[in-house]
Length: 441
Image (cartoon, rainbow, N blue to C red; front, top):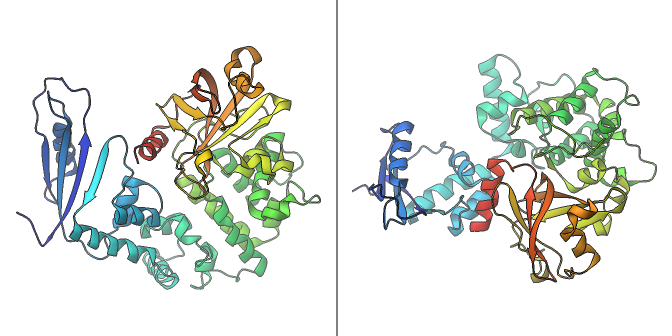
């Protein structure tokens, strides 16, 4: 029996479709590091095979003590998703968000060791990050790029752009790798880059990089779709300033062009965002001139700007879960899956969840009756030609993932109405797993 020098990781997988006559083990034991990943997966696969009367597979994973430098945060973030703080909270409470019917548990001693490691990572200091930057520069014989730094150190963009860090050039300025120190205006813009870390549209990133690198000097000649992409950047970077009446759509790019350090840093940031794009596929707009692309991530203000409605950014009625745009016969659904936060009252905790990659259950507002104009707009979609666009985020504060147009299937109830919709395009597997995990939790 392994005791004091072992970290015990245990998780249970519930099985369905009983009755398949494939006798297999119902407990799998892993001993590492002697066993390869291939053997690990083969044994797990055997344990998950079905048999009459078998309802679950218990997995025991014994690991030896790890060095303090071991990145438990990376391992568990890959398993659970979310930030380091969210992973730490899940380990502390024992309530883990795994896909399907998987349950993950750590014994008392293991939980203590893992939490110590995770908390140490949460306390990553500016001095440590700068020291690691210097070491990497010495190894390379030159100043590393942001992509190289992230790859070699295991840090995330959210680490670099935490308010206490100040951004990539703020770190570089402490190592004498910058020929000129960033100006006050550069620093202000750099701190705003944390508001852009969700951008995963290849077309947007390419446009921004080209505009700042001099490949597309003229802004006035841009087509409507690209002008709106530029305006999205303006609203993200300038926030309340962008909502002033005298603000122009191109101000964000112009401000970057006027600040050499911030412009250079933003181009490196675009490269880093490119590097972590999950889905490389053609990006077709949801509507003509609208730079809202399927399965890409957007904040609410970017969605409104992309739809050509910058004047509605911050408007009260656009902060709700849905709003109707009569001029284009389109309704937008904003869905937050995790409604456990205080921001959601019992009357706004609607039952919204993914049934499969192609079907979504959505609940209307509590005042929407089946025979109301709004209710009939949903039910009679085929007749009225209304378009419904679905944007979903895991929790409040996350970017919304655009899941595309919806087709009405059926409904039940009234005040609120519970409606099943079919997605025109299957949602990405990684996002469906996120939806399934939140529903299971």
